[in-house]
Length: 299
Image 1 (cartoon, rainbow, N blue to C red):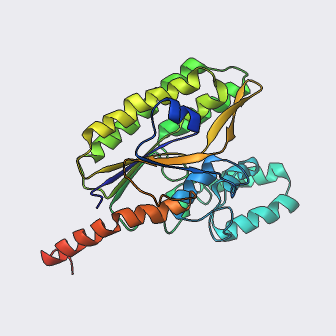
Image 2 (cartoon, rainbow, N blue to C red):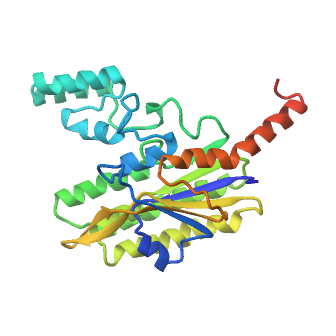
Image 3 (cartoon, rainbow, N blue to C red):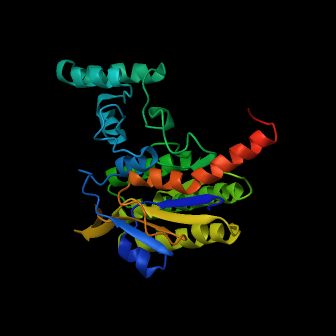
């Protein structure tokens, strides 16, 4: 039985690099990602939290679709607002839509980024859990600054590696601190995430990319492993890999999951991660609840 489950997501780490750097643990599975028309962070990670493909379910917010709607000045997340957004794109001029969108954002009617409020039911909702810096769920401000700085540097045709390295280091420091703090708590599930690896895969594939992966292992994964108790288990996940094309890194399959558990029934697709997690920690949650009932703390 798993006492506590710790997950570290590392964005965009190619399976070949995971092999070369010794990241793979006792059991590993690769995902072909054929169900994703775009290998994008904002679709693959949420499918793990939700247990479903957000781009295939009209009742779920698709963070990628919502993110792309920023060209209209706002992201509209409820089904009614999304329908209105689609209609408005045909009948209202872009400048007018942007003006309306800004007004709605200022009035807290519309949001500019996806977050945990988009979904009623995720893997984190029914268990004792800690989510740290997860994309499209609860990104830290440092993750947002990393993305914004990347966009600025690319737009100005400047690689900006030194500035980006500083922010990536900040992200690792903050995530490590939160993960280590969680080892002192009794969360059933703790899930942290590093975004910087993906950015450097795109802009500095040959050198900065493997170096960022190496730093993440040394500064995040290894310190966490040292603090785990005997009954704790670790999972490391990457949403997709990378390959070089015309001097830049582009996304490619597979995604992968590796764990300290010896398990022949690992999730075969990203959405199956949720059910797999719940299967691993469900018994513990029930036992904790029963103990609290026996002690009279809950009915």
